[in-house]
Image 1 (cartoon, rainbow, N blue to C red):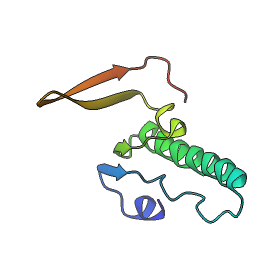
Image 2: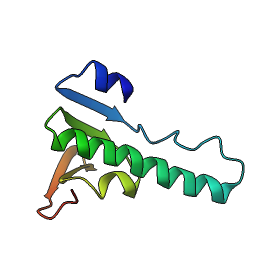
Image 3: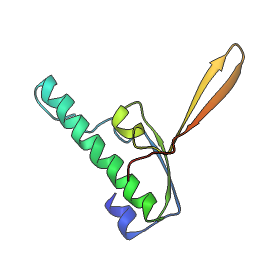
Amino acid sequence: MAIQECFTAPFYFLDEIDAALGMFADVAYQTVCLDTLNCERVAQFIMQATARRVAQFVVISLRPQMYECAPCIIGTYTCQTTTRSVMQMFSNTQS
């Protein structure tokens, strides 16, 4: 994220950026707490960057802390032999 502050780009694609957050904690319970906190920090950073209209972000994540702040969610799934997608827009996102 520090690189983004110095060398901005108009678009970022982040694939499971939250997967390794907190992986160095010793106890499983602490790992969950640390993962949640770090995931929320990354989500807040992305929200602030988009609010300043610095860049657009596409984030792939399975963690609720990441997608609870999103203005929209796009889900993809396979149905028989075709791939389909669903989009949900949210009007009351956090600022």
